[in-house]
Image 1 (cartoon, rainbow over the protein chains, first blue to last red):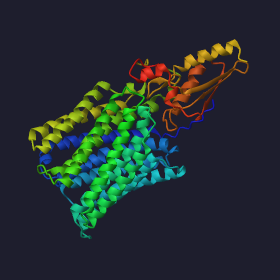
Image 2: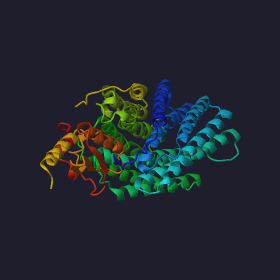
Image 3: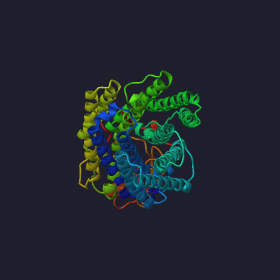
Image 4: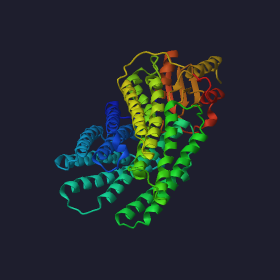
Length: 427
Length: 111
């Protein structure tokens, strides 16, 4: 046999725990969110909101992204991961750091636990970024997808650094700064610099495969890259140097950049060769629609001054971006990627020798179907409740999101705990 | 010049390769247009399958190659099977068969 394709995939044992941990953190987030439902009708800067935010963005989203990237990067960079032990250390420090940070923020304390958390999280992120950078250097060829991902990791490092600075200053007060300005920068470098650009890079790699449409609008994607990063830089300068005239410029350019990205995605979707979409892709497309909401909010906040309720559109921007766009996308894409990783782990040795199930057969599709309806529905209820300050809306939304999270967690572990069995291929 | 045996064997191999499926697209690799050439030498008992993938970054490439090799070994245990992964000409959607397009458009899965 003369195999020319090399297999660079890392050991499933280092990737799969990320998915399990992320699912548990997501479930914990929704339990906490539901128990503390009044915070969704209050000001966004309070200890519980801070704790919940970091539980979601670090415990769920970043953990899952790190897991998926450990799997995707060897494929995308066409070389083996530089160090698999570093992947394990990354996860352990991420879990410990996240738990420490969330407990500290929740209790409103600012002592040694908070510093410990900040240090651990920064270390975790640095280890991950260095591992990716060294992997890249094994075969340093650039492409749009890689540029977005590597840029995202740069912004992640900056976000972590800002977070550590705020943590240290909270305890030791060694630098005088406007904490709200810093928080805004931290939020935007995290959401837009890290999450959004990482998602753009990964989606440019995966969606053409899933849609079977490789005609990516590269110029629009390049415009999105330039616009989003210029917007971030202008926003940071404006906020930190108090040149507030830069802020609307940053928002305008940033919105154009994101719209350019959405144009790329919807063009791929409209001209796809694979017309029949599975549940994971349908959920993902809903998330791209949801991405329009924070864009609209950003424009409303900046250019009209409209506010709504105590939480305000500022808090609403974060909620719609995280709960509307990012988590909906993750809930869809988990069941595009995780089944393959599990299937490879369990059935690779049996390929061609015996009948095996297909990767999609490993998922409990009926549960996934219910989850894919409840999560976006819950988000819509929650958003409506926040905008109209309706306790009923908020509770209904959180309940639906919580049920969806239970179903998601069940399905993730249903996959993770899958054992080998003989199957006839299903139609 | 191909013998009659080699011709009918090649047809059989093409049929057997329809048992190898791209697990993401749920279409067999023949209808997907991934199989570029099958060379058979009945005297040396050698089969060379030249195939491509939809994209160089296809994470299932190794799986597809193993499937091809195992599939043909199962049907022709006396033959040596050589798999060649090629990237030129580049794969395109024009290589998908009518049955493949039917499956992608929501019809019967082509496997």
